[in-house]
Image: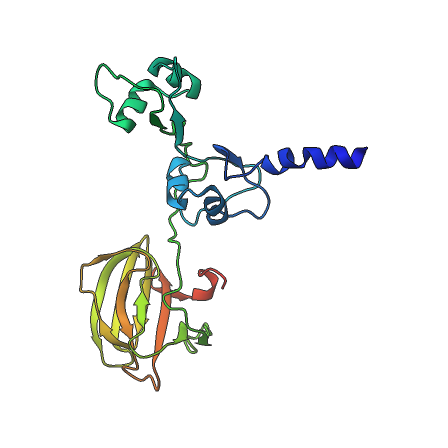
Length: 257
């Protein structure tokens, strides 16, 4: 008997917490914003904006996310605009705007009405504003040489990333270009981006520089093409992260892959 009861209840258990149908979703352990967005069929950026999320969009178990989705109502005999608005908890003015209705706002049986989502005010971020940028990998190649800088200043001061000649090199984080020119001593061609609060990134051995001094770039934007300029013996990208002019291990700030 218990077995049949569980089978009958299964559809309702599956529906609970399903982003494909709900307008609020309680995050479960291991869920990501991208996975929730895919199942909800709502762009991740839209969910992030509705919930005041900031990169890298870390979620916690138990967190409640609003899923902003619009619904469709087929007008039936006896329906009124006021009644439909009450049913869905949406101001009729919003429904009128979404459907291009004009005064006197006449509706007819069988008409399809878009019911726009109404969102609660986005919650204020609980954590203080970050002073450290979110860094992303500037290239997808394997790391050929890691960071090994010693206290005496000797050793390797960044990452050497394997690349094909003319591969796109991306800005690791948003910022302002403070150097984009030849650097004959070591890198051949070098781009330096300032990310504020003492943070900078450096990109060396470029075959070509595609930004100029003073450009404001976004995370992932192309800043050059990989090459073997300077002392490089093969196409590669030399990448550094600096804080207050001190080089730190980029691997400690980049996401795992």
